[in-house]
Amino acid sequence: MTVINKITFALAIWGAILSTILGIQKFFLEKKRIKITFIELVWAADYKISIVNIGHRPITIADINLEISTQERKIPSNARFKEEIGLPITLTDGGIPAEFVLTDVLFDEIHNKHADLKITVYDAEGNTFSKYKKEIFDEKYSKKNIN
Image (cartoon, rainbow, N blue to C red; front, side, top):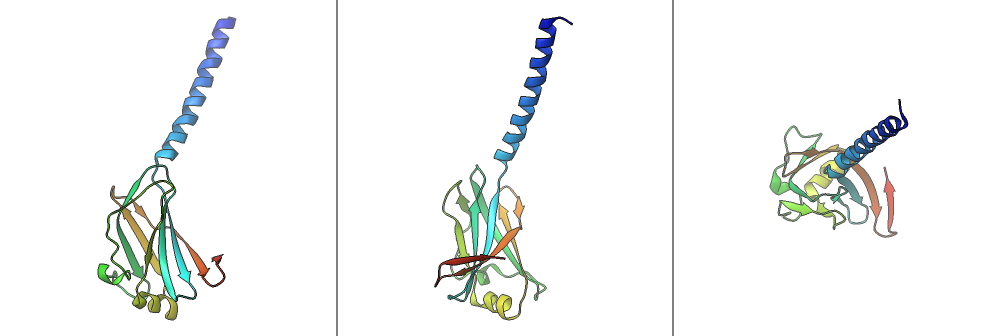
């Protein structure tokens, strides 16, 4: 093997490795990702759901589904949140999070009956997101406790 063949082979290997790394990086950058947080507001006696786009592409939230473990059925859309949420909502990278306060009926079910809540968020492309993190926010002392 001549020196030129060795250099050509080394450049080919280097190019293959580099293109593989860039392809994987591009795949993960193009993936739509959101962060869902279920927050208990201590002094307000409320719960709210916060949705943030942590990906690099805009994402359109088409629907939010809530299910409680004490009930066998889905919660109707008009009984989920205190205010009309006006779906669909488009979240951009680094934009303001979408926050939704749950109704008092749901607060009673979750807080007093210790029911588990299942949150499912649907985007416009048909993807579903159901992993969420729980937080407790104390408005009086501006402290967050993460469970």
